[in-house]
Length: 470
Image (cartoon, rainbow, N blue to C red):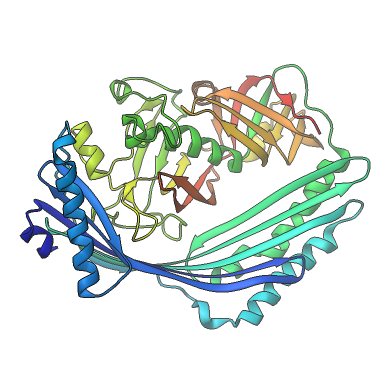
């Protein structure tokens, strides 16, 4: 940092960033692979003249770091004449802190052989749960992640953190000669230690999924053709808010930086704080500080203290996700959304844990007065357009609602609506807030960071469901 200042930088920032990943992959009960990967290095960002530039190195010697700093300065100097608008960072109150997530059971409390046996037990639960169909494909991946950061900046930030995480993914396919196939991916992720494996009860959960999906495969009926009330499960709701609230409210996307990479946003700067996207039930929050969450952090990668961000507030387009750079462009303050995947990546606005605010209904109260409707609990496939407006979700586990009770399974119901239609059609929400993990991709080069997305079960007013071909 001092070297960059001595070379003429008006701002300098250095981030030591290490990611250690231990992974095991099984197909059925056979090990496909296991390994450990360590990536560590230092990312350097400077403002020199009117230009902000970034460089990184994994050569952790004095000379290696010196070369990275000199590279960042050289890049900025070479671009100085071509920059039309000065690049800068908004003023921010940065932190000086040290924090870590304490694992109740550390990763080395189980041997690799014990972890493999644990994964085989999940496979046995799946196999033993099939009755008439056939489990034609089963793959399970287990990963332990340890992330260490130390961030310093010339305006006073100094933050040291350690966050361990576990992520599991189970991919299974059921097939029946007359009924076709159904695929389900179950993902589990949080920060913490091996205690999570006990909390998740993975074998039992996968067994329940297999039974439910087989029931839909064998006995599922077409959804009603007329418009009906639909209850959307928290898993689908979480995906909807991630894609149609979180992504379009990333400030760099609103500004247009993502246009050639992942698309644009229907949100325009003049809409923020002025235009409504939904009714009073449409409050979407992104909060990095939720204890145990997959996207947990207390300070972002610019040293700004994290807090809950109210992306949509009671239907109003409210607060984009900002880094200090986008906050400068929008003439506002950062809300600590700057994250980088690794040492070689620049911090950019990212989601952390995004969810629709829950309501106060029990699930049985959501459906008690529905004479004919559909409950879509989980999804099989989805897509959304480049501006995050038109979207489509194909249900996987779904059920008819008849006279206030769940009835026969429904095969391949399709939800299709615009972002405004969804957030304007919410009539009730359950009190149960549930989260689901993911690795969210964004940027060029692509960066993947851990996130949670979630929400309650949501009832929306009468819509017409489609049906996907089998």
